[in-house]
Amino acid sequence: MRVQLNESNKSMKTQKSKIQDQSKKIVESLPYKIKDIALAKLGRDKIDISEKEMPGLMELRKKYSRSKPLKGFRLTGSLHMTIETAILIETLKDLGADVRWASCNIFSTQDEAAAAIAKTKTPVFAWKGETLEEYWDCTLQALTFKNNLGPNLIVDDGGDATLLIHKGFELENYFNEHKKLPKITSNIEEEIVIEKLLRKVHKLNPNHWHNIVPEIIGVSEETTTGVARLQQMVEDATLLFPAFNVNDAATKSKFDNLYGCRESLADGIKRSTEIMLAGKTVVVCGYGDVGKGSAQSMKSYGCKVIVTEIDPICALQAAMEGFEVRRLEDVLKRGNIFVTTTGNKDIITLKHMKKMKDQAIVCNIGHFDNEIQVDALNKSDAKRDQIKPQLDRYTFKNGKQIFLLAEGRLVNLGCATGHASFVMSTSFSNQVLAQLFLAKNKPAPGIYDLPRKLDEEVARIHLKHLDADLTKLSKSQAEYIGVNVNGPYKKDEYRY
Ligand code: NAD
Ligand code: RBV
Image 1 (tube, protein in one colour):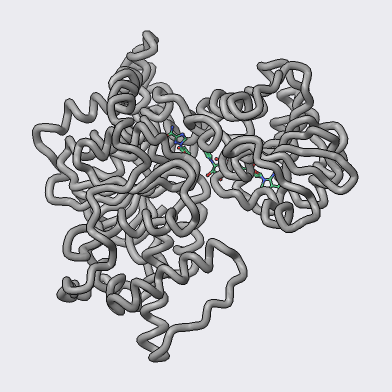
Image 2 (cartoon, protein in one colour; image 1 turned 180 degrees about the horizontal axis):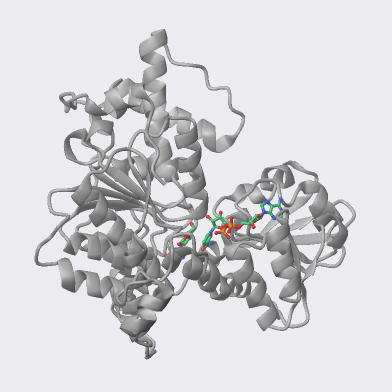
C-alpha cells in the first residue's frame, strides 16, 4: 500500500535539518545501559548456537557484508532485546549500519543478549524488568546519536520509537503555535511518562524532533499492532516518514505469528506456572495468525480449546478446525487458562476475572498489555502477591484466586525467551531486506510491502535448512498457470 502525506507534512520533509544545539545533550552519554556486562560470555555462547538456526540472516551477511549497503546510516532499533535480536543487530552492523538499540517491552530483554551486544561496543539500553520511566528513557537513548543527531533508519516493533518521535514533533508544533506547552491531561500512567519525558527534551532543545525528522529515511515495522498504528497515522495524514510493513510479508506473519506462538506460548505458560497442560480447558481470545498458533499449540498438549472471535470468517475457521466457538462471558466458569491474542483492548475485563473459577491462569500474547484490564485488577479489592517476577496471584474478597502472567504483557517474551531462532530468522530476514530497500530507494512517505519475489527468496533460504526438496516448475506448466518459471508463484492478493 502506498499513501501520500498531506501537504503540511510534505513541506516539513523538504526543510533542511537545523544546526543541532550540541551544548545541551538530550541524553546522558553512556556506552550502554544493561543489567550486567559479566553475562556477555553466556550471551555470546547462545548467539553462536542460534546463528546456526538463523540461515536467512547468515545468508544476508554473506551477500552484503563486503559491499556494506548500510554504511553511513544511523540505525535505531526498538525491538525485544533477545538472542535472536542480537543476531539481527550484528547483521545490520555487518552491513555497515551505525546501530543503537532498546527493547520494545519492559520484560522481554534477555540480559545475556544485551550484555553480549554491549561488549561489542554497540550502544544498547535494555534490561529485563525496566520501569516505564526507564523503558522510555531507553527508547530516547536509542534514538539519540552523538551530537543529538537522530536516526536515518528505524527498526520498530509495536511502533514505540515511531510514536515517541511523532509525539515529540506534535508537542513542538503545539508550542510553536501557542507559545506554551499543553497541560498533561491523560490519566494513563504510560502516557504521562511519555509526556513528561517529552517536556524534559523540550526544555533542553525546543526543536529537537523537528531537527531529526528530516533525516529519517524510514521505519520498518515488525508486528501487526505496529502496522495498525502506522495505518491509522496514514489515515490521519500524520505519518512523517515512509514505513515498511514487515509483518505482512508471508514469511513473517504466516510463520512467526503462527508457528512462533505455537511453541513460545506454551514455553511462557510452563516456565512461569509449571502447570500440566493436558486435560485443561484453554480459552483463546482471537483466532487470527497468533490465535491460530496458540489454539493449535494448546490442542497439541491435550487441552480442550475454546475460541472467541468477532470476525465470522475467523470464527468459522476455528469451528472447522474442531474448536468450540463461544462468547467469553459464557465460558468464564469453564476455562482453566485464558489467553488473549487479539491486538485489541479490554478483552478480559475485571468483571470477567471476578467470575473466573478458582486458580484460573490469565495471560496475553498480543503486543500490548491492554488486552487484559490489569490496572483495574490492581485497583480492585483483590490482594496481589508476587510469587516471582512475572507471576502474580490475586486473591479476591471471597477467597477465590487467579494468576496473572507477565503483568498482562506478552507472555512468551515476559515469561520465556520469545520465539525460537529459526522462525525469527524468517522475520528478521524481512527486516534486513526492508532496511536495504529503504536505504537504497529513499521512498516517498507511505507504507510499503515487500515484493512477493523477495518473500519467496526468504522462504527458499529457510527450506534448505530443513532438508526440503522444492519441485521445479516446467516452462510449459508455468505458461499453463500463467506465472514465471522463477516466480513469483502467486498473485499479490493470495492469502496463504
Ligand atoms: P490478527 O489481526 O491476525 O488477529 C487478531 C484476531 O483477533 C482477529 O481475527 C480479530 O478478529 C480478533 N479479535 C479482535 N477483537 C476481538 C475481540 N474483542 N474478541 C475476540 N477476537 C477479537 O493479528 P495477529 O497477527 O494474530 O496478532 C495479534 C496480536 O499479537 C498483535 O498485537 C500482534 O502485534 C501480536 N503478536 C505477538 C507475537 C508474540 O510473539 N507475542 C507475535 C506476533 C504477533
Ligand atoms: N518476537 N521476537 C521474538 N525471540 O526475539 N519473539 C517474538 C524474539 C516478535 C514477533 O516478531 C512479534 O511480531 C513481536 O515480537 C511482538 O512484539
